[in-house]
Image (cartoon, rainbow, N blue to C red; front, side, top):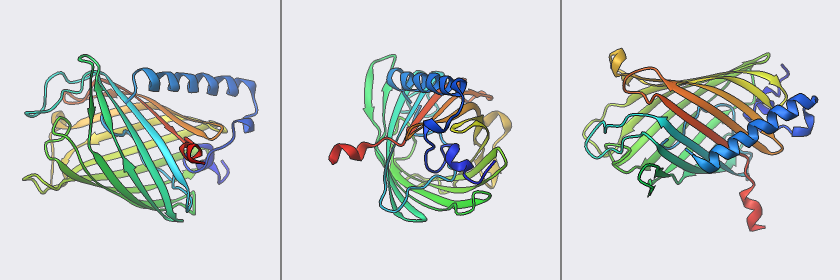
Length: 281
């Protein structure tokens, strides 16, 4: 695959839909986009974001907006701690605003909210700030670090103030793309000062310009110095499709949890490249 794999993959800048040569590819992309927008409008997003960070970074001076949509189709029905909202049938929508500060540095803001579908109750879910350093000059090997600090309600986190350190490592080889995020999550306001270790990985294969398929795997393994027993770990695997339609990038996934504490089935849709700044011009 040529060096612009990240673009055709929806990882860096978008690839125009007109570049896709076959009518079959056009029909596939149109169908997938319709499915994604239907999911986003009708069931939307589980808490916050379900995403493996790759080689995507805004150009200097560029504003960005991604909409994260996750919905727990079949999940835990009992709280894991006092005050938690059990995730079954929770729909979370997270607008993520971003701005390119320099070629290698980006700032962002999350403003998540969620809906308890069974009880028809909506919640505002705090806010998070993030900074991301990323060097993706060589598509064969990119690297960086994303740092997030924010406040979360007790229904989704035991402690109100939390931080995340997300190393970003990955690259392309031919038609293949891989990204790895060995995440560390740290409570800033609770008793525990040990970080939680939750590595994530994404493996994709390009089928056509602007169309790729693959898997994403998300985990919660415990603390780095004490990995939890297998039954107490969280493992969820998503079958995903990445596609580009004009300036819009879409990630669609359906995930299955493999352990007793994992949600059995979760759907996710991420829509990026939304031209929200056009409304202010």
